[in-house]
Length: 506
Ligand code: HEM
Ligand SMILES: *[C@@H]1O[C@H](CO)[C@@H](O)[C@H](O)[C@H]1NC(C)=O
Ligand SMILES: *[C@@H]1O[C@H](CO)[C@@H](O)[C@H](O)[C@H]1NC(C)=O
Ligand SMILES: *[C@@H]1O[C@H](CO)[C@@H](O)[C@H](O)[C@H]1NC(C)=O
Ligand SMILES: *[C@@H]1O[C@H](CO)[C@@H](O)[C@H](O)[C@H]1NC(C)=O
Image (tube, rainbow, N blue to C red; front, side):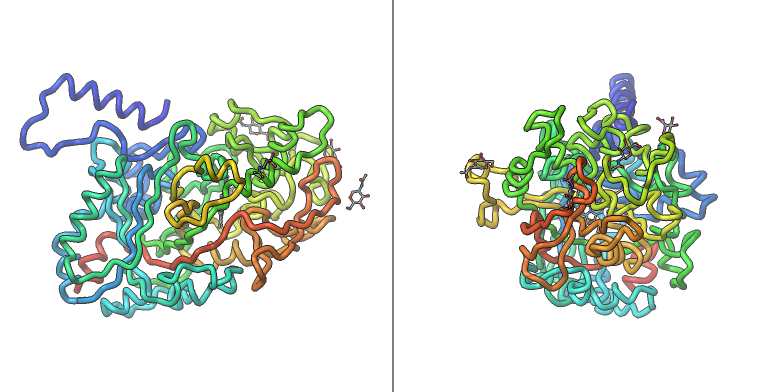
């Protein structure tokens, strides 16, 4: 049984048995987080003891860093600091007490009505007079300076992300939009005129049976690295990584960091627009020709082979021809694969992409057995959430995304890592956009069909993708349409909570 449901049941039972004493603050009875079956559960609250052994202080790490893709409603509020002295005094006195730790989020009983997290860009830290070197030059320069290396066309970037004017990001998360809006009003009244709003993006888990799925319809947040000292039950197929791969100054982080930054993490934010009707039509129009499948099934299989999972989340490496919803919903099985088919004698990893293309999104971003070791140092924790409305009838009928800004939709993409250089930047540049990666394959994989870019080129520049046809492993097709458009982003530092008053606000 899922932790959150169990907690709700216990919570309700306790509530009905005891009258809540007046002095106790109102407590939640429902979680602010989603917890689809396909996603790994969060650890139980008592994991704190073993975390301390691993050097992790779960009361000091901001909650968003370790909860993965479980936010329900989330507001990203990008701001500039106008009056640093006032900002600092409000930050220390009134905002720090609101900042939510990972420990608080692990139990419904301790969750706030709305979780508040805060992160700063380099220019934000500069504005506060914090000059210590955090050891990450990509953070220092900001994401706009990294855009070309990531393969972005900055002409597509939203103007607010161009340059380095964003000083900070406030992340507000709850189970209702009303709660989030109320907390934003509260935060804005605390900071008053010491900040200016630069941009806001409203994220929300998709409705109904699409909870946990991104806008193209695929279940997300299934495969996340397990963190030594935090993850309670390491699931089959999860990469078990040192906390230092995600959290600064913890075991496995070899870069010198200021003492106060220990337990912090770099937050890479990317606003990624998704062209949903176009993607849906593209997939529908390209059924494969597997004899035992219907035309519809052949189209669905083509779509699944672009991602490496079915829409349900079932991995095609384990369910190569048809979706398997039971497999998808079983988190002990839905990540238990390596692309190497250990039970099959003579399986040729360098040539065989019959079950999963080398270019499939999940394989380009985490090649598993394709690399000699899982210890690549390129893991990150994903914490993004869909933004924008569902596809409208008019868009569906015309197979075209509306140009109405209110109907823009996509992924408010967030990763946490201790090194942007090794995390987001590396994976996008050296793996996703590199048509020769995964190296050593008989047929060059091509780019990631979902998010791979031909660098510095027009959006529809044809780029090679191999392996989508299970009947012919050497076939390469030329992708000349973009399903996603990168609209910009920024690199932030999510400080440990203790540093907010001890360092940032002095
Ligand atoms: C709109 C853009 C994107 C969409 C729709 C998308 C969708 C997905 C989906 C459906 C999965 C499979 C679910 C899972 O295994 O958890 C996935 C996994 C993943 N994605 Fe993305 N993704 C997007 C952008 C990115 C970007 C920009 C990166 C990094 C450069 C990235 C990195 C990953 C990673 C690391 C995984 C887990 C792979 C694994 O551990 O097996 N994604 N994504
Ligand atoms: C995971 O896969 C391996 C074979 O690759 C199998 O032996 C093992 O039983 C699987 N684990 C689960 C929980 O299904
Ligand atoms: C890939 O391996 C599977 C299992 O060994 C086999 O059935 C299939 O024919 C192979 N595909 C190619 C192209 O060799
Ligand atoms: C939309 O795409 C589908 C699938 O290709 C097609 O059947 C339909 O005719 C298209 N509609 C329009 C208005 O082009
Ligand atoms: C497989 O694709 C390759 C490359 O496009 C092509 O040369 C070859 O003829 C195809 N094989 C079959 C059996 O269709």
